[in-house]
Image (cartoon, rainbow, N blue to C red; front, side, top):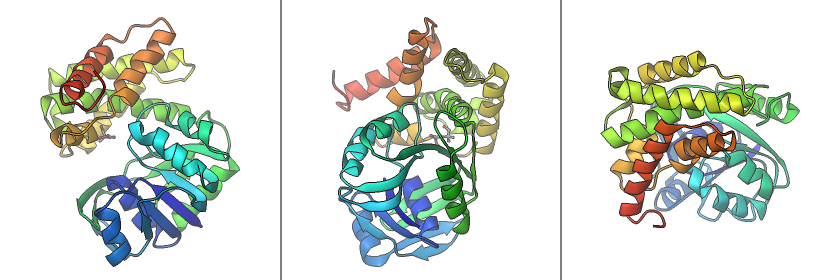
Length: 301
Ligand code: KPL
């Protein structure tokens, strides 16, 4: 299968590298990483060892492939959609954090857009070298749920490359569960500058649980059957299994980069408002992280 992976950060590079063991992959990202991959290939180490030579480019426009996998940060989705719209694809798959990415892609692209979740752990160590910090799985399917032959086909192609993948007819539930986990873990770890495991103890645990509970309530208002118990169990599971990890938002804040707070906590607040529900913990967390971004000049005043 011909696959474009748009976003050569840690997850995009790891996944692109794994898929390149079997498929014709083009990685779209930034220099110096992309220049190094184009010149000397991509190395994957730690839990999986591989050396592959995917095509690599900084120009994501005018590309043609069977599949575009979008792995950019949520705030770059608009830009990715515009670039991809200049090319041609049979399907696109969003493997991103937060709400609304699939809709942004679907508005711009002339192909089926699928939603996915990935539990692989990845780290970009240096240009041309990605580390696999956790072997997980990918679940993908139609963003509004139901069967998708395209999702089955893509899942099969990923499995051909030894990437554990399944197609699911209940992506809305999975996506909201992931947002509940991210809304609980990401802003709290970023603000407290602690690894995920620190959320096993109060008071951080209580704050994270409140954010996840509000998210589950909002999901239900949106017609998604996500119980509070299920959201809290998912939160607890991820805190435990990723205890040593630094969340993506903590990594962003530590590096002085913009975060995905708008697509996570702020998106929950907005969806809750649409249904006349309060989400005070998400509102507070979003407000503090956004103030930090503003102060750093990372967003408009
Ligand atoms: O998705 C994550 C992230 O860091 O963005 C995990 C580690 C699952 C929890 O926040």
